[in-house]
Length: 382
Ligand SMILES: [Zn+2]
Image: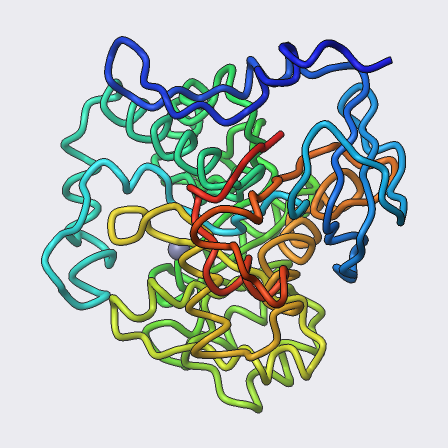
């Protein structure tokens, strides 16, 4: 039995502000207010291969029960997509936004601009900045993210505080300060800077301990140059970040390693680190996903990455959409429960209003979502 229409209307994305003037984050309300059964209808981007079909999605107690073809009318009608996965962020960097253009080394290198700002920030300010970034991800359709959290175990505690009560899922990659085994128990993985920033013995020890404890290994590589790619591959990482400087031979080695790659093209444009050869990565069957990276220089919106990638790097809307959803879920070990619209998975979905001023007249719903959709086109997100 469907609940009354008024209950369902509570699910609509609110445009109102709360008393503090900040945009509200309604995920807790969604969870509490979600009807036992909800039917969404229209164009469904379904399954892990993102097939486009006319039909409906039946959601029961927050889980996708059924995806069916046909014209059953649901409580919401639009373009129904899986929510995004932002596979690489540094959410604490949002504490200061839009610094002057500067080199990668000056921005994020040891002792660089970012580190000086983070060191001088109070815990409360860091928590607030990270919470705002997580809320912004939710507002722009992201349901899960993977964050490189610096500052040792205390830094991870602050992120956990920031995420309290929010309906966003996270994979935290901690970074030890001095003791290579000093990783917060809540961390899913370790997230390392380039191998060139460390003593090799330290990296070796961090990796050995992380493996023993069953943690994922992720590392930046091929950003300032391609010389650190070989070292990064030597530690047999699960995830490589950037590879914007990688050549075809490097990518063949990466494909052989089985590691996922997170590309962050807007970040690379800012730091002039080149643009990743995403088409080559995909042709080598690498699991390529997308991250907004440093939130000091980028907004947390996956929409901006999608449009850039589709127009500048890969003219294949389906592949680009997979990079921003299921591929990211795979890299973060979440694909069993989210990243696509499939029966049995959590209903982390977005419904776009196909009659919005920006989307009305779309010839191809998937292309329109990838190339032009905006957060303001979202009618409902769960
Ligand atoms: Zn990064």
